[in-house]
Image (cartoon, rainbow, N blue to C red; front, side, top):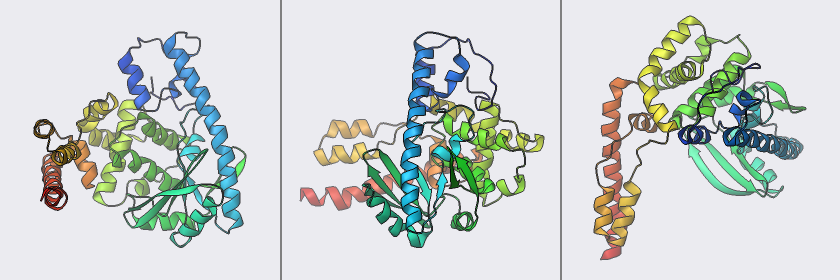
Length: 352
């Protein structure tokens, strides 16, 4: 259903639909996108896909209005941020509403982060979440119509890439407005590492990468595939998954390297799209200990497989089958340490 779905022309699809397929597409945020393949088809699945596409198109319009308001206010304060993801990625799709909208993600220079947050607060957006990631920071401000995520980083890419992007003047016309966007090579790298750092939970993120890569064949592959070992691995694996699962077209040498890198992890990604992902029960154990609920403690400690993909991405290691075992062992040791520390510092003192 999703192979080449970002291209201007797609062939119709008449395969069998079951609830597991609908659930996987919904989990992957791609149910609206597949409506392009269901023209002329009727039934609950096709009708639901078309309704979601329409809803996402209306959301696009609303986010365009919000973005225009936010950018106007920021420009008035001397801040010209870079738009990332969301509407910036939606421009690569041929149909409005293909991409679901979330927060408005804006990259700003680190010295201007607090000023930008103050400007956004003046529009009625309250800062509710401040995070540190890598060498950067982010502030998420929420308002009645949505959220604005102000960032100083492109984590897990190194801080130098965010600095380089801020110095560049790459612009694009997005829904009639001239907006700063990420330089092409950095955007491609960011669209590749973003799904990897989350463990590839959404099919739409690989569609985004494929759509961006095929939008312009002039790709500086040496630059896109550069960086530290784990960044190279994450970028290559994302491209390989988009190629193997979605039909992304890349030069033969890149395709061979990327598909080879992604082959071992493909079943785990498909399992995630199907909702079959082991759950970290550490927090359940801690909660049960606080309640002195021994049966619940024993249930939470029951052996469950640790997803190697989750372990590798949490530890920011290269996505390699050779490292999968050590990554699982390291993650289990880290969780055991976290549990013991919580018991010593939080639970035991409360029961003395």
